[in-house]
Amino acid sequence: MNILVCVKRVPAPGARINITADGQQVDTAFLGFTVSPHEECAVEQAVQLIEKHGGDVTVLTLGPAEAEEQLRTAVSTGATKAVLVPIDTTDWDPQKTAQALAKVIAELETANGKYDLILFGNESADSCGYQVGIRVALKLSRPIVNGAKGLEVDNGVATVRRESDAGVEVYKLTTPACVGVKEGINLPRYPTMKGRLASKKVAMTQSEAIGDVGGLKLITLRRPPERASNTKILGNGPEAASAVVDLLEELGVFK
Amino acid sequence: MTVLAVVEHDRGEITTASLGVLTAARNLAKQMNTKFEALTIGTNADALSTTISKFGAATVHQAHNSALVDFGPEAWGESIAQVVRKVSPQVVISTGTERGHEIIAQAAARLDLPAAMNCLEFDKDFTGAEALKVVRARWGGSLLEESVLDAPIKLVTLANHIVEPSEEPAASTVSVIEVELDESVTQSFVQDRVERVAGVTLATSPVVVSGGRGVGSAEAFAPLEELAGLLNGVVGCSRAVTNNGWRNHTDQVGQTGTRIAPDIYIACGISGAIQHWVGAMASKNILAINTDAQANIVTKAGYAVIGDLHAVVPAISAEIRKRQSK
Image (cartoon, rainbow over all chains, first blue to last red; front, side, top):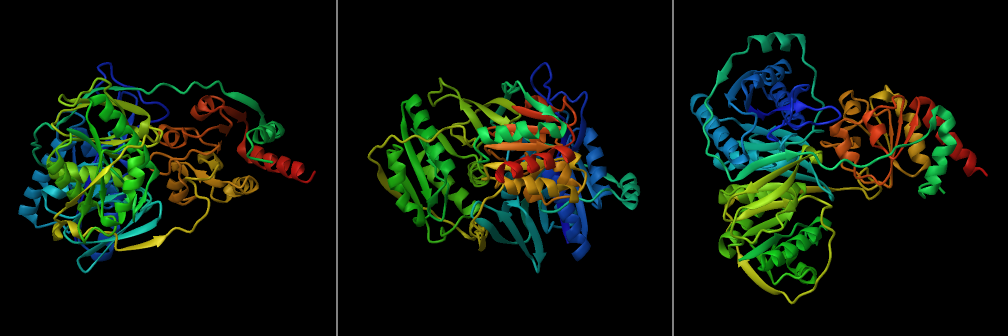
């Protein structure tokens, strides 16, 4: 089974997100970077699938040259191949991104054969566009379901489970198919020693990013108004219990 | 020349988020001095035209096809695309939910149009012809993006809980549109469904007692369980806790977990990183219990106790028991 996982390099924010002076991006001077959480789980799911069925997991990212770091991280947790699609800025709009990804994937498939599964994160943690995976799937004429909290493949059928307000829904897609994965589908493993060694040695294939500018154009980023809060300190240590229960009574949650 | 609201429904039952979308679509149509219309998908939603007319839609388009018996993201997206080609709206708006984002993205991909998800504001001077300026949520709402949708037809989803539903009845006409769906879009329908057991969930509970890295282990959640039990609430946790395998992801509050809005959120040993905060910020009251008076959650909470949760939480439970026994 051959699985492709599209991942995105995103800042790992702490308590506060700062914006650059030009308002165009997140100021990452003091931030580390990570694979967007849903996609971290997509990589893990793909690795679990090839552990069961055999095959390869290729991780692909469209991002700055530094995103190589996230591809190597994915390899250290079990992915077997890596493709970097470098761009000179931190972010492309969703249409341009999807166009470039679909083109690169089509080229990879011409060279290596079709992927049984192409996985995406449900949405990226930073830009939250909710659309790149769907656009790529349509360009490749493949079915896609988002929100996957369960994914198994058997005899050319991908069974996707997802949560809704009503319960758990089940979808069945004939492979080759695409799936948008959500965090909670699994608990991603930590890098292994063997994985770390593999991540140092893995060949970093590069593909050129080509896409037309889409219709969603960023003007500026800004911070939402701060929630004004004058924290009322109810006390220190266990002695505060009485004041806490007074508050609970006052709010009507404890009678 | 219309604003088209795409109604999200589950097997014929309209969702609360849809009522906000109908209200927002009506307001936008008034501003643009144009008509407000709605779209339902599948014959099982035909009866919703009564509800929709209470919100003032001039026309309710009903997309029909024998395949449309349950939710299917691709079939719904293709249905929207066909109706949009026929009706030529200037704005198409749906819900800022899992399904809403998915069907608008599907429709946008099929129409080769841009789409902006989780919009909080639309340009107050927008008339319909020009590009639409929007403010949308990034990072789960901890950052805002001002952008323009530069396209003849603007596809958007409305961030949840932004517009309070308000009725303004009008006489609606119904128009049935037969859509054509081939096998390329009819695969991805719900094939089976395991209904949720009724009861209080993390998303709906009025009291949530949540633990973070400071709790220290899976076993150390017992006092939090006890306090939640005494308050008829549920236990939540931060991403650090699920990453450590101490609790299941279904308990996770945050950007990639559950967004909650309880009457009170009791955050124990949680520092309050962005990823967690955006899931908890809609809480009506927040009580932080933390050893660090400078922790992000402490500075943002309405109430705080500075101290070790392992001592404070059992003391609160003991105090509740003491008062209950009186």
